[in-house]
Image (cartoon, rainbow, N blue to C red; front, side, top):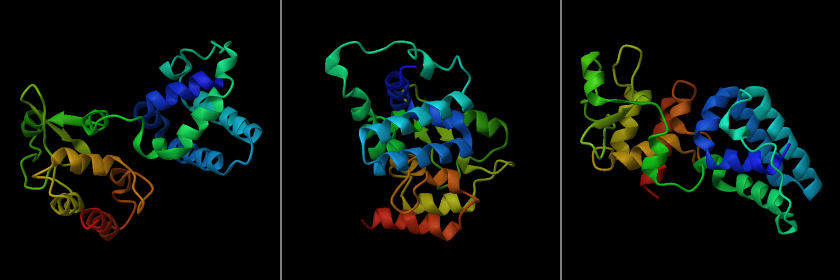
Length: 210
C-alpha cells in the first residue's frame, strides 16, 4: 500500500474525508496527528502513518476516493522524502484548516440548504444573527447547524454570530464555526451542546478582540 498517496489524498480532501470518519474517527485521527507531531524519528513517523492509513481503511469504504492511488508507488529516488514531508504537513495546520483553500470553498463543503427551501419548511433563516451566504447564482446558502430540530435558530449560535458580526461578514463567521481555534481545538459547530455556551461565546469574543 502506498501510504504516501493515501495521506496525500487525505490532505487534498481533508474536509470530506474527516466528515465521513464521524466524531469518534476524527478524535482517533487527531490522536495520531498529535503523535506525529511529537515523533522523534522518521521510522516512528512512518509507523504512525501506517496506523493512520489502517484507521482510514477501517472507517471508510474501500472504494473511497482516498484509496484511488493506493497501489501506485513512487519510483523516483527524488521522492524518497515525500512521506516525511507529507507527515510534516499533516502535523501542522492541516488538521485545523484543511488544505489551503478560500473560506468559501471550506464553508461550502459543510451541510447547508438554500434559504428558500428552509422557509418552505417553516424554518427561520431570516432571523437576525443567522448566517446566510450569498452565492454567485443569487441564492442564499444557510449552514444548517444553526437550527434545532424544529427549525428554530439556536440561541448560542445567534449570540456568537452577533459577536462575530455575521450580518457584516457572514463568510468569515461561517469559517470561524467550521475551523478549530486555539481556545477550542475542535470546530465550534461540533461543540454545540457538548460544551458550555459561555465557552463558545468567550472563544468568539477572543477572536474579535485579538
